[in-house]
Image (cartoon, rainbow, N blue to C red; front, side):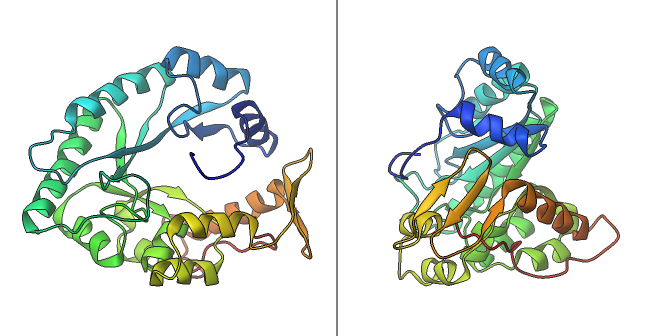
Length: 270
């Protein structure tokens, strides 16, 4: 991601995904894996991983702009990687995630109509489309999430970090609309930084930077997937994943209600 600091290589990331026991991954941002679907699939197979799908920003609110051709191209690539989940975000059309335009009623009608069109298009490719409420996109805050629930039939990606920053309690959303939650991004959230981003005191990009490194924290990565911050304890990715599994078991559909409204907590803020 441009401007977000040091980038780990795909081989490093994929190796550590395998090391913690996961069997599949999203495809990552554009350029992370090879553009050719067949080549991308081979890279994943080398790490004994399958593809879940990926995060796809798309302009949905612009009247006169048809998002179908670009998503059709993405879906054709999905066939080559065996991907089955299209994670859409309502792209603002602006660079980055720190500003976004205001939508009028006609813009909202266009956005909601396009969501249903893309959901139907994905279904014809045997792919499930979900909308990812995301900071800096046109569906960010709780009112906008509710408009999507009320005005379209698209499924949602439950991202604990982005929902909290946007003012939506992810556990409450799961209780409110369990039938609309079809994909999950579980994040460890620094509550004080999230509150500053939500209030506009710092930008989303600055919030990510602080959440990853802190103002003065010294962060080191060892040969194992673990992170240690100066002055703090360390936790391995395996430990984090065991806590994530516990949270997943508590979500609706597993016979229990969510146990809390916060993202899973660990001792590490990196």
